[in-house]
Length: 538
Ligand code: ADP
Ligand code: MG
Image (tube, rainbow, N blue to C red; front, side):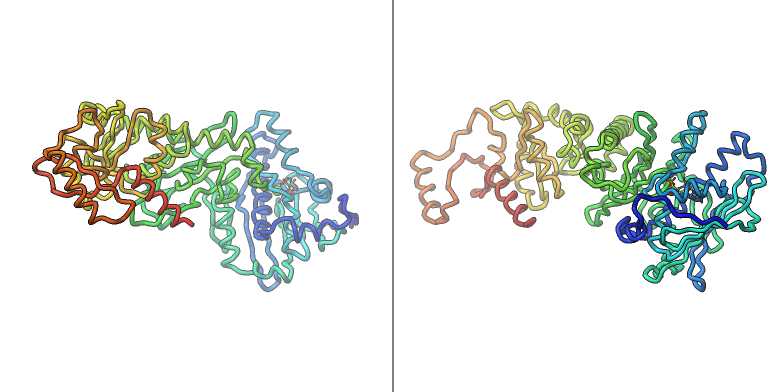
């Protein structure tokens, strides 16, 4: 038996670990299963290089909950540790064996997938345990198996033991405050959350709970449309099929894989947010991907996996991280390219999906100028009668002759509520104008922002004026009334309408128009719309 003291600077690191390391105690499972995965991956590396010559055998990791003895055991068939290695890797808190292994084998050109580095790693077990035992036997032929025991004080013991199998069992004796973890469903749920896509088979209650080769880890050329759809179902069993997806696959200058799905969005369905999960080497990290994913794409679903995104750091740090900024820009570009490709290669299907796609595109155009530049090409406006879509260029080409105002700007006429605005629409159509639909919540904001970004375009709502005056052209029509008649008519309305904010003016009307039309200028209407939006938000 060997006795010794864990070598850390602070005499009592454990109270700190217990209380302050993570507010989220459940991550101890992530840490320990990650270590078991690493130990297994390391053994596979040694098998590839020929250092390990035996059969690997069943390498599944097992998670065992023992309610009676109040323990949780994580058992692997990985490389194990010799007594010296336990001393080196365990007794020195925060000495990462993962890093050491990586340095050695990466240098030999090996493609090694090691998780490592999630924080304090192994010692997170003490957040929930009054005692932790490590029973381990190294892969190295003829080494003695050992048991390391520590009750949460800086003292530990190491004893020789009999252990027939290669690998490591970590036995956590769960403390009283943490008995919530001695629950089947709870552990099952935590495993689902963090370990669902880990690269080594993981067994719990006799069945394998993970998919070791999720779609995003494969090459796009290996996957069919059905594979992508099936993976979507695996992520969101209850969701409607996605519209399309983008497979991210970069290894320089940063490492990023993942699949982003465009969900189907309809006016009546609630939009699900926070549906993108961030992974690091197939370990779940978080579903808060703000800053990593551009804001306008936060409604997408799917998975992003990047070991280059710093973990366990504050938001403000993440924002300034150069890799995070590059990843964000890369995702924006990929999405724009994909949309552009769909628009060019299959316009009918693009139009069919526009109701859903349009929301992202418009939001992106409002918030991201780089995206705007690309999206100008494929942004669509639907004709008020439905079924026909124009890009801005197409709309211009078809309407330039009639719908250019006296400043030379292209006037885009739009309706926000086609049924209510029908009489205006009919009148505008009679003039040969083309009216598009802008019906959704985002459209009001879109129009306001986009007008300042698009040169030579002016948006006018179809009921902003009577049809003759929707387009403010040089040649005003003469009134059919004499000046005297106009004055008496104006006075008559003036005496009847007493509200100070309504001004009466007469405009020449065509013979078939309705005798009286009340309109509000585009400017006044937008002022009111904006005020009510602000009011509703307050
Ligand atoms: P990291 O994973 O970042 O290296 P940890 O604190 O999680 O840090 O683990 C420290 C070291 O302990 C590991 O690098 C590894 O060498 C060793 N270790 C931990 N768990 C196991 C295990 N199940 N099998 C073999 N070695 C392990
Ligand atoms: Mg670790």
